[in-house]
Image (cartoon, rainbow, N blue to C red; front, top):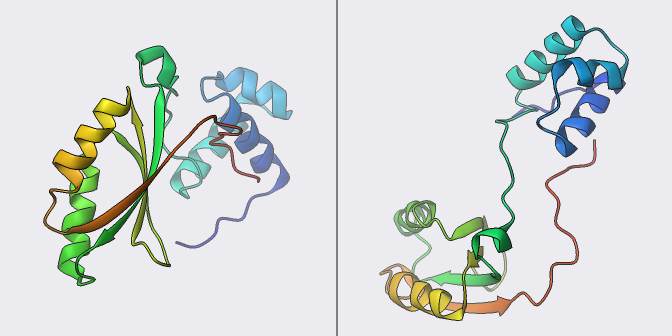
Length: 155
């Protein structure tokens, strides 16, 4: 994907939207110092260029009983493209996985799970992941406290 060129007005719009995705176009236009019509055109351009993705609402995991975050490294039995593709499709079907990265080094993947408790994680790991025919091994870290979590990027 080609990097989008952003002028200062685009940057202002993106910075505000990363913090308040529900802001009205009129309020956004006022905050960035432009007309509502101009702001709308900018938004559409940012969407078309792939800078802005879908609007979502963030859920507080604790509010829905998901109090445990676990980081797990996964190693596959084979590095062939079929094994990687099967594992990635498997991960996409697991709602408890909130992030998955293909990584370099000793492990093949880094996953983040958000679960209710240790019992749920143990069942998930033992019954689904370690029983996956493409998985060779795993190692997990249990998050004690989140120091910083943001979805906002520097623009």
